[in-house]
Image 1 (cartoon, rainbow, N blue to C red):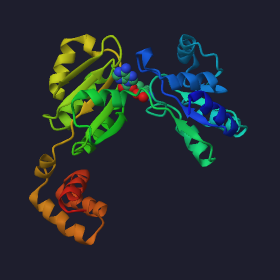
Image 2 (cartoon, protein in one colour):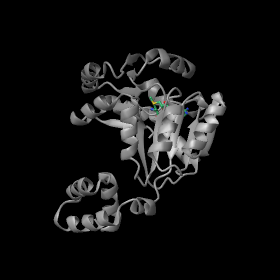
Image 3 (tube, helix red, strand yellow):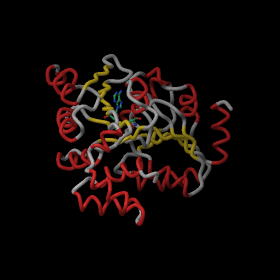
Image 4 (cartoon, protein in one colour):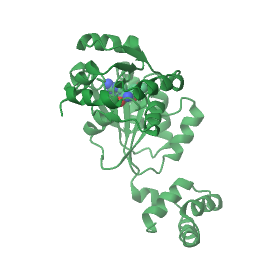
Length: 291
Ligand code: SAM
């Protein structure tokens, strides 16, 4: 079905379209995205001042409504009402895919609860763009969003992720990148390979790789590498290392406890007894006890 017909159909039912917009290069918007944005009744945008110029560039005159993290709960009710009246709406954010570290969750959740159709268009997203070119394992990965800004919480979160065996993807802002790299070097295995993907799809797109300490050195030596938008991709902890880090007595206790208790409970008790990390024990049991 062409996007034009798709929107005509949608108008009969009141559909919400989730429309990704470019993360840098304007050429990355899809034909279908342009058609949907041009034909819906209104576009809910995170910041109309930001999206206005993009709409002008695309020659789109559809009215814009603001929907950002501070007004999402009150605006959602209004938008749901419009959808129920059979209007079609598009949701966009400042850049990339809405709901991915961007507003829209409340609206989509309530649409689903009200059984209103939600149609997502594929398109730009910094996670998949960075991951697909970083050269780290992509068969399994976790998206961790932004780490907490407060140092103590950030370090706690990183400690909890120390045994994660999947590739991890983080968003980060330029003014925190040096602190985050320093914390990555002390709270995760210092040998872990990290890729810093910066200014994706833009003029100064760069991929830097190395350990956290090596990246910290590179960024400290060249302030330009601290600028712009960035994604941090961290290789997962090697499975042998996760097991090697756990005391043999704790492994034995975990094996016994898991015969009687649910894995989560066994890990919590064992963590208390042997001063081990609960997550590490949980992960170890998953991989070694056929749980
Ligand atoms: N919804 C967006 C998406 O689909 O990627 C993400 C929005 S989030 C508020 C903004 C963060 O995404 C930035 O701080 C950065 O970590 C990442 N990001 C967005 N555009 C990027 C780009 N061109 N290059 C690198 N990272 C980018």
